[in-house]
Length: 246
Image 1 (tube, rainbow, N blue to C red):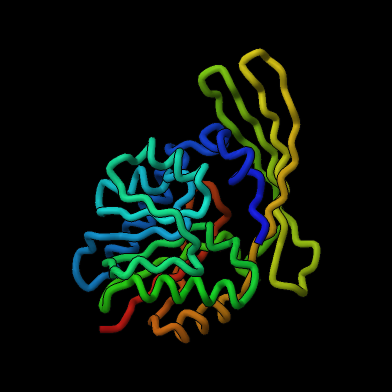
Image 2: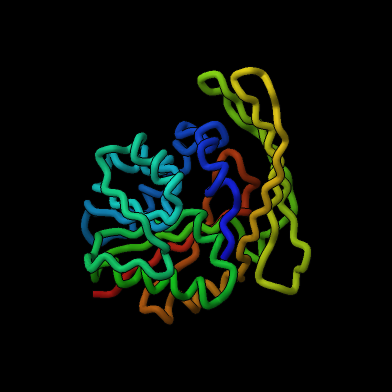
């Protein structure tokens, strides 16, 4: 699986693309769903694919976090943002910490699981790190039933540098299990020079029933939960809340 440039040579620009404040609303949703689904108040949480730590910057007020992320550049940002959290470099398909947690959280990094095998392996990782009676939450950006082409834009100013981006989400082949997100970045340096960069992200797209079947096959009791978010069209976003049976 080839890593997009955002997580490799362009990782230093991440805080100018996505700021912690942008995640406040969704992090509240994730934390509430995890707490509501748990048989007892969850204390420990492992996030698989934690990126630059923006969700963690909000979730750490209610959980003790262990953050797992393959990109060293993204881990460096998260360590600065969340120094009180444990950080582990690892791939959600293969990492094994030998510990169980009250809750497991897999945000949109799960979109980089582009095949059934990859997604099943990530689900298995979540299961083995979830204590009996614990809960797991998966938050893919899209399902086959709700996918639609679209565009977005944004960016932030930093200490002398700035970034602006255009995001274009589209599906070149509706018959397969992936879609494409193309990013155009404008990167402005302190001296005022600007470069334009293209970055392509190929992401996995599966049906609701595939998700539910594969989660159940791993041993979870899963359910799909529609979620309303102020920045999304109603009826376009679903999460998967899963309990590991005792």
